[in-house]
Amino acid sequence: MASDSQTKATDRTAPQAGAQTGEVILRTEGLTKHYGGVHALVDCNFEIRKGEHVAIMGDNGAGKSTFVRQITAVEQRTSGKVWFDGRYVDFDGPLAAREAGIETVYQTLALADHLDVPDNLFLGREKVKVRLGPFSILDYKAMREATMRGLERTGVKIPNIRNTIENMSGGQRQCVAIARTATFHSKLTIMDEPTAALGVQETAQVENIIRTLKEAGEPLILISHNMRQVMDLCDRIVVWRRGRICANLRKEETDGQDVVAYITGAKTQPEYEAAG
Image (cartoon, rainbow, N blue to C red; front, side, top):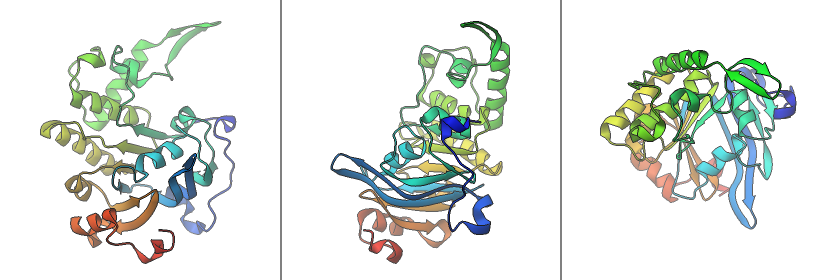
């Protein structure tokens, strides 16, 4: 877990959360991000509960990835509040968010091509056998064993974990990035377009991993343009448009045409009309 200095967290809970605070794993209030005069994210109120899989959809530039960068502290928000696992948090960087239990699979994967699977999974949080002043002896055996457990937990099959990432297929690379979330028992997994560059078979493998996370009761935020994928894998769909949330839809109460109407602006839910 991150130290208090890393997260700047307090024991405050989200206002108006009431008895549901223990069920909500992530909540944002008024989350806003400006890049100079560009308002990329405006007044976003969002929540996801434990065990829930939520899709984030919207056109390019709608604010989806910007939202993820704020809650994972890749960037610092302009304004707004974030609660994670029942605590108000103000992470000072992505490492603090990871240590608190938020694992993110970015579109770029954030993998080191010249390193093997265990080295990538433990990059920045290596297991140490002996510390000798400024030098350390790493515990490679423990890291390999933890890697195998993480791969098994998600159903990821990598023939040789000692292979470097640069010698793997796109699907294997994506699976390694996803397995990293399982290795560290994340409290929340975020996937940003995890199958955008994959073929049919590799996409199916990633989707099976997502189903495994669902069966284990682990919450997930999925950013995707793939309507079939979203309807198959998620419980709820939150639509972004021009930096704002414009719809919050239960999967069983909507369909693809309805979602597209919100994405294009043909429809807006009444509670979001004033903000839009």
